[in-house]
Amino acid sequence: MKAIQWNGQGLMLNDVPIPKPAAGEALIKVRCAGVCNTDLEITKGYFNFTGTLGHEFVGIVE
Image (cartoon, rainbow, N blue to C red):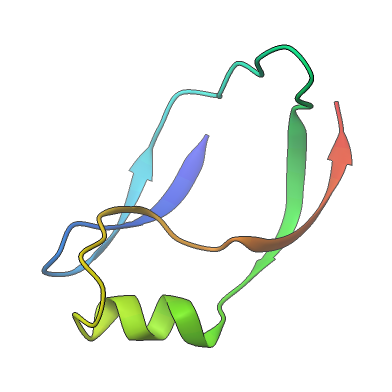
């Protein structure tokens, strides 16, 4: 699957493996993802974060 990721220096569009849900979790096929203020703050270096952005989304439970 494709994901927008922050590496501490810039944004990248990467191919990443489809996650495998653990017990009690669900796999959601994301249909639309938004960028929120927290994502923007991350790209300004305000948090020590690297990884996938876009935690506000709409999807379908697989």
